[in-house]
Length: 170
Length: 385
Image 1 (cartoon, chains in turn orange, brown):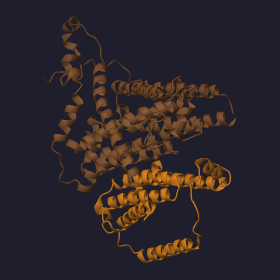
Image 2 (image 1 turned 60 degrees about the vertical axis):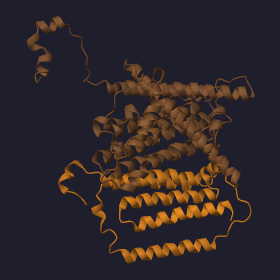
Image 3 (image 1 turned 90 degrees about the vertical axis):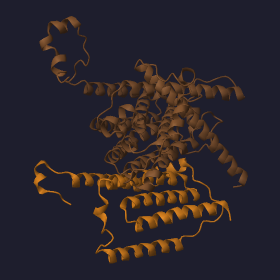
Image 4 (image 1 turned 90 degrees about the horizontal axis):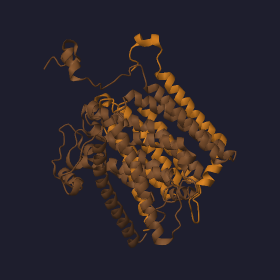
């Protein structure tokens, strides 16, 4: 068995065990840690697919920022608050959506042709150039979406001076 | 990958580990001596010649101390936290070159790799805080997360400015670019932003609110003792050294500025010594700042980060981009950067000199005290004794 295959199985084990941990664990802080394990596994898969830049972005954005912000919010809560979180009325809906997503992923996986021949990493310079020339508009649109989300978050949490009697929204 | 390659990688890791541990031992001694000198004390003097074996004695003491697990602590998270802090600190060293030849693995994306890995160490602090199940520890962990996320932005932006100047993310290449003029002269503002936010990332004194002894009595580390506490300590000093070396590599020209005329082995040795001298100077500056400035309050810290450093770091990117895009000579960037730096220092000074300013210490002669005994501040304030 070639070394890269072994490494792939290691990374896949990380992704799967992390993913199962997110779903199964009763303690929501453990869920966040499992998410991190899963994200690091995905970074490993990217690395094996010669996408070094993507792997590092995965660690920086998801492993670092996203999981830390999730944990930051969770640590201000008590575990008791989340005891019944898995008994939700929306479960059938969630099942339909996740099955649909699975079907879509499998379909795209089957239809995509497997790349043949030697693979090598795309250089950072090429990546940057194509991102800022061919893909400039999608790139800018993505940043606009982020800006809208940011402004939205501020609008939601902001309370005007007179609003204080309204009480806790939770 | 054959067995011999695996062996070589392991050997490199062991050598790296040993040398970094040695550096940490030296650093603890150096910091204690430096702080002692600033505070007009002797520092450690008893163990070995001039106290030079003090770090060894300290580490032996730490290892032999009892390791305490609080009853309410979350066992797994509590024990994993020191490792989660230490591993990123160690992994950063994979791609940091100390001379052109001496580097574990030179990566094309080295600088990006370092920023990505450095973010992960926050997670260990959060784990330590939450796992200890103690109020102070959780507060400390939250403070650490808030502070590190905020200062991550100017830190990365300052690095980005250097990457734009060098047109590369490869650390060896960045140093080679500085053979004629170091980036500290081209981007003084970048150096200021980098060093300030790096101090905050390290959690060293003006910015050490996440383990402030007088507020959160040690923060995430409050429940730890013995060997596990010493791992946090090790990671902190490793990070301090990393930041000092990075400052030298990114801004002070690393081993290549000013250029040396030698070749071969002599050149390599001299470059290493040259790098270490520059690093020691930066480390001394870090210790000096620790000995000089009082700790910021948490709101001051956040305001300083978001209202001053983040906008400045974006301005730094903008002026660098303008100068590079229009192909202006580099001294234009130096001037722009210098003007902004002076402006930033003015803003800091204007904000800090408030109307509250007054003497903290005043010399009063004994005669005055005796003659005005009734109104003396000593009597009114010390009445309880």
